[in-house]
Figure 1 (cartoon, rainbow over the protein chains, first blue to last red):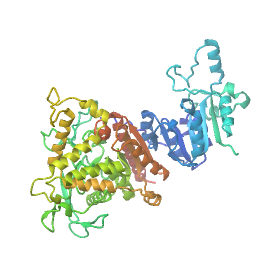
Figure 2 (figure 1 turned 30 degrees about the vertical axis):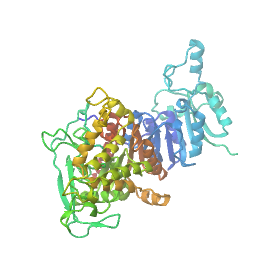
Figure 3 (figure 1 turned 90 degrees about the horizontal axis):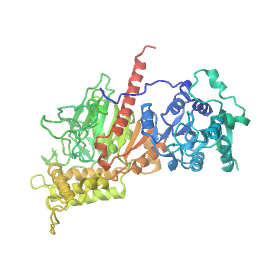
Length: 226
Length: 401
């Protein structure tokens, strides 16, 4: 009779529940790590890390919907704007700070990455690659702002205000003296292939042509050694 | 804090009222050891007034303890008489189908130690003198208030609560529970609260106490057989009431509207509607609340400081397992969001399981009492998850290996 009992069932999250980029992020996180998931959305990745990787830590989320989803999963979550920084946390508090599919929506990406590197020993960033051939051809042929299943918004109401390509991101890393430990461009996007083989194939993409072929990329980063 | 403010109907919710409820009382510490207070003083016997809503399950794993704020009491939900126009102070949140769902949970709320609504306080009779304690009542702390609640639960055979929840000072008590009885708390909801009072908060309390003690009828607290310091208490309440509302909310409600007149009186009369409103609030409160309780309880809030230094903080938080949920409201300036975030920062520093959410509301500090869908959902989601996990654990424990 109440409207409140739409509680997520208590179950162990399976890797096949994750988006592919989330699964790759999860594979980069060492067991028992302390993680901070910025823009954690519905908390699926964080729940997976806690259940399957013995991670500790919490998420930061701005939307009420995301908050409720995380609370329903029993996850610690902080209602806040990541653009306002991570000043609550001391240096090196976390083993990993994760920014999954959120970089393109922050107002001050440089500041956010800088703060992530301060509070985290390693950081993981995934973002949609604006250099993907589909986006390039859309703009070339139609002459209008491209739309994709990942970037479905009209230009005037999109939350994605900081689009970049893989090359752009590499430039920023160089500029900020960030050490790229790993970069994993993904060959496909769209849905969640259940088959492990398909999930594996998605990761096989030569780096040289990734800026053209990968709709999304995952970067594992740390502060550059001076 | 303002349990006297009128509650609007719970629009849009299929929830119902719990209906008629009665306050029960029990006398504890009658024999044997007295209650030891933080001040070093002891107290016995102690009467506790409490109300319960819903039904306990067979393992008593669905108990939720509700902690009231400064001026609240044990009457948190439902009504005492069929013709009551006023419901319990958190009626919007406690009842069948409400966030603290009495179809699912067994809810308990007791009047705080030092109170004036059934639990022993300055207005109670001191068995040694057969007169009201008045200022002979020992000074109490938030820790003492939680200690008495714990004794009540022990008396009722409840070893662990699924959750403890409270707003404002009630949030401090909920936090105290998580710190002092880590094995007995599944989760704590700390709403519109603070880990410590700021100088400004203490200042407001100090002025309130001055208003009471400067009342000619105060008589050093010994006023129970004569006129009561109602004027002082009423001024204290009027001032506090302003701090419970937002400036915008107050202005939207009253603006510069005049009360029953077209023009200024050009005399020292009640010109503005807001004056009249406050006067009414103050005088109603002055008549029904005990001034000494107001002194004692504000003092207990001033003293509250569970994290005075890093060593104490680390030590106090070491054993805390409870899942904590800190909530604040964007227009609250009595305990604004930064105070809640301060608490969250301390808890995060010690890697506690804490969530934080800020809600938008025009109603200032009082928001925690008023119906709000997002806030309701968050409370409900949090405690339902706690209970689902509890049932899940039990299910797996019961299953033969």
